[in-house]
Length: 227
Image 1 (spheres, rainbow, N blue to C red):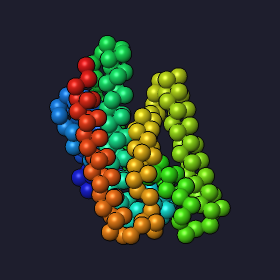
Image 2: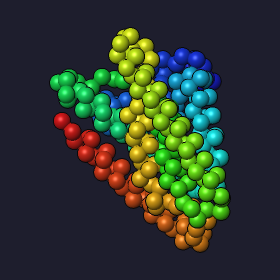
Image 3: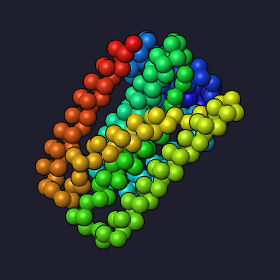
Image 4: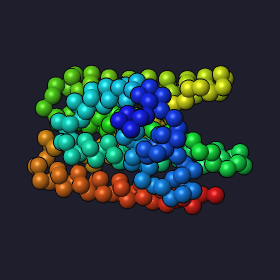
């Protein structure tokens, strides 16, 4: 994006949409469902991407040994899509509630996927069969829970502040919640591979991902037919 002249600090909404940002009006109205995926790789300036990559790096250090590289990437994409889907659904519900049309709002970033990885880690780090002392597992799990809780509170506070002070700052908490809930839901089917044979674990992992993709497709179909 930067190589094509996009500002490194403040890209315009038009530029973000050109490179694949999420927008309910375009996803549902124009059938541009690819944005649910591409939006997880588009960021609103250097500070936005730096913050998300720092969070992703720290959570990934915990998640990659438990899920494997393929598993971590799949969780990133699935939970990112889940977050963007809930964001689209929320905008549609609000438009229906207010008897108004969908605005061309813009959403972008990896934060839904970051919350998704946090959600799945909360489940995986509850497994006492991991070859890690329980006290250490509990400490790590508590840290992840605090990370998710604090950031959700920050998002909620920012939304309240936006409503009061004309909305110069907006955090998409619906995307955060959607990614987080998807991560929690994926957890039981992705218990760490240390507890089972590798081939058996990989088969269970692929089945879990396929089922999650199917459920998200159904959710998307339902959203497309709202209103």
